[in-house]
Length: 203
Image (cartoon, rainbow, N blue to C red; front, side, top):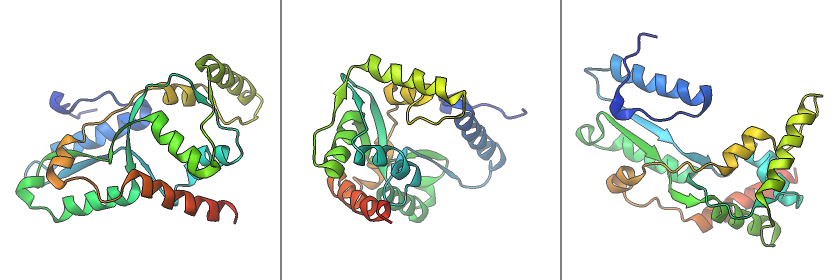
């Protein structure tokens, strides 16, 4: 309430969390009128020490329980944590006139989800990704919703299925133009992350 929305930067935030971040951005712009500011929008940040992925997706992969929908063409913005930190340092140490009043996305690149998932699956298991029809994953998500009502958790549910099937590319062009390509490649980043995961998962 009371926050003036700037149509130039309006997005389609996902859920209440996304809406709260957008409100925070608008408050920043309205309050810091005479003060330099830069807003960063992280993409899907991943890497070592990511507890949600290590206890969720990667753990399911290790147990050979992960299934991926066949024909998935969704594209998402991915950001390896070390690359994102590198980009933040570039922003913090860059000249004020170049950084002032910019909204910059953090991330490596927009990538087909199936490529990112397949590379992780191969590195963790040594096998190819298992693909199944989309309706099979949808049915599992509905089952997850059903048993959640009696207090039983299940690795996939309706919102997770929706997220899996939704593209979320981000505008990384300006960030890459300002700072260049991030230093860590996708392949070496996945290798380092999986090495950490295997050590961490074994205790």
